[in-house]
Each structure stands twice: as C-alpha cells, then as structure tokens.
Image 1 (cartoon, rainbow, N blue to C red):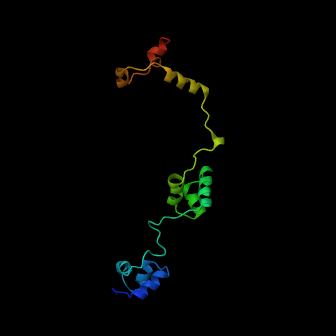
Image 2: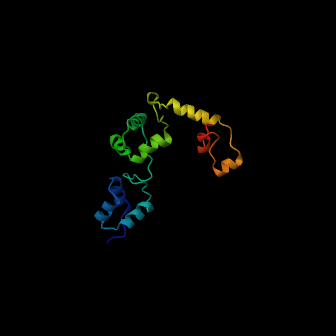
Image 3: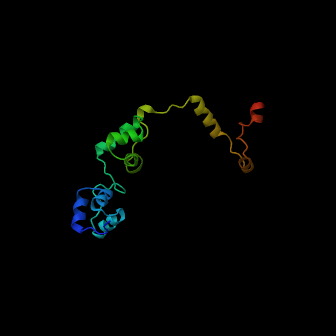
Length: 150
C-alpha cells in the first residue's frame, strides 16, 4: 500500500469530486493518508463537502418553506421539496428568518366564560405572604369559600 501521492495526481482527483475513499482505493493508499496529504497540499475544502457548510436560501425558497410549514408539512417533507437538508430548512424558519406562527385568519378564540373567570381571578384581593408560601388558593377560590358562598 502506498503512503504517498503526488500533489498533481491528488489535486486532479480532488477537483474531479471523487470522495476520499474513492481516491484511497484508486491510488492504493489508505484513507487517513489521503486526508493528511490533501491538508498538507492545501487543496482546500472538498468539492462535495457538506459538513459545516452553510447552505444559502433564496427568498423564494424561504417563502416556500414558510408556506409549507404553515400548511402543516413535516420538516422532512419540506426538505425533500426544497432539496436542502432538514436543519437548513428548520434554521431558515426558526433561526435566521422570522415567520409569523399564526395567520390572521386562524386567530384563537377563547370562550367568554373563561375570560370572565380570569378577570375575576386577577381582580381578587392579593394573598398575603404566608398564603402564597403555603400555596393557599386566592380569596374566593378555596373549597371553604365556595361552600360558604363567598
């Protein structure tokens, strides 16, 4: 097994986009030697390298991702549609790009009874420190208060 490859030979295979494993097999050299020599010869990033590469998205792709996500599609389906990794699609929506989570026509409706109960709870007199430490319910919300009609 060879331990050395000429710079020109390695550079030619590298620029063709062959993987490190393919170069090692073709040149009868081991995998680690190919990686070492590529770094030594300063060939730069491999043409097919994807790890730690930041994928750029066009504004069309970003809007498509946002629309598909609002439509309820999974990240995997969106990634297949766009042709980008799942993490890039996820980062586009949750990281670098801001997308409103709700459309105006899908507003959440809260029942009026629940709103009134919350207003009454907030308007109730404040509990003292002992009651809040020991977890007593607010005035008018304990079982004793309800039984006695307060």
